[in-house]
Length: 74
Image (cartoon, rainbow, N blue to C red; front, side, top):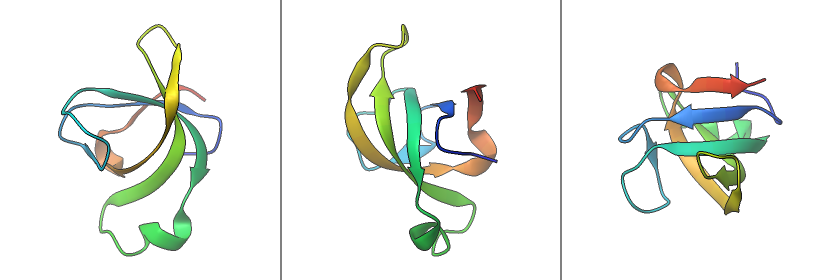
């Protein structure tokens, strides 16, 4: 289960809509249940992209594959 406030890690190839293929670290601000129902096995998230050291890099939206998400900080 992914909730607002979680910090998650998404490996390359498991998320879409924000640029280059790299590992995404995201502090989740909003889980878009209204959109996620249209995607099988994926969830639409909004939040703050983070560098590996936790430095904020800016807000983004991403469609991520649920089974590959790793929650780093609940």
